[in-house]
Image (tube, rainbow, N blue to C red; front, top):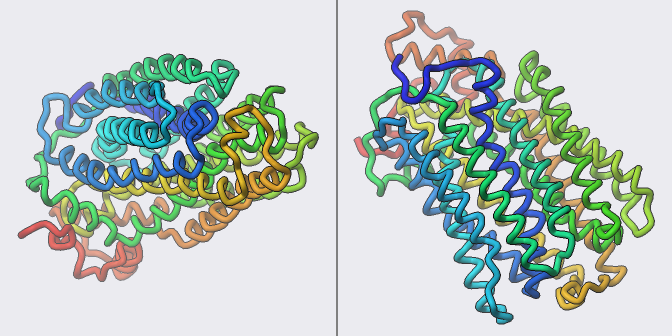
Length: 493
């Protein structure tokens, strides 16, 4: 097997170099989810409901860019490897566009503010797409081993958690006044440089199998991407991905409001304490759950971690008021972080296995398209979460004028904020557990999938047993004789 990039090396150092780009993904959206709405509502005075729609409308743009990027990646030929080539370009594009999100517009017009920041968000989202659609599709083209992929994915999640820790804590020391727009820009400048450096380490520390590019047109990007949804496992994976991640979107997106307006503790450093405990417990959880996942399955850790998250989340109902015992709140926060580590580690490890399921259905190796569809759906969900948060804040009476003047919200609004912060994640965590219980792939099923792909390529001489056929059907959602059919990819034949 020939490779682009460096010679394959599976030691811990290269696992960490592969994962380092995830520092950006884990960190950037903590900053955005935590401070972007605050920047627009508190510092700029934009109405909360209006500000909340910017990420959602911006994600609609991803309906165009993500499928196209997945297709472009699989069609590209480069001496660096197609995915690594776009990781290199995306490292610069996404870092620059992240910085532009926080440029202040010298206007108080809600219309001018809305148009400008919507454009900036779409620009950032495009840069992010160029970097992360290829990155999410890289691991299947680096190695085939189920367990080794889990190790690389775990290191990636360690970096994601480190990114979340650094980006969840450092900005709280920089943005000491939520009304000062200059502090947001100072924070963005520091982190845009850091995101660039970590992404470049991944480029230099990875490799990619040499293979023929897929012969598709750009116009086929959308039907190709939609065809990924034919896979039963991929549809269930999206359930895991969305319910698991959207639950944390509400935590990060509502955290400042919860600490500032409900606990009245932002000036006392409560937000820093809460984020520190959440992220440190998540990092500890990554170190614990990685070995557990290797010894059991990627699904098992979700089934254990989701109830832990749920317990910590619902426990906050008893302590969501001004003057509540902050130590008990932090204990419950630690449970949330520890449980989230289990679900997060597993979800991203499962993503790398979806390319094989798609290949068994379509006979085409297209990890770029698979990752592009997953990234697109995740971005849409993040936008929906932000929009829902804005709508719910307005529904409970959040007053941006009072917020811009540094005042306190009404008691009823405070109680409403607490319920948004707790109940919405609790519902999503429950749905995560339900989907995990029916998800059909463990190490055993994945081995059968790989064996059947090799069989259909003429690399495996055995004949599929009845049990293997049933597994293939359960995993894909197709009858065994309908697998390996290029027509399942919606590609012209």
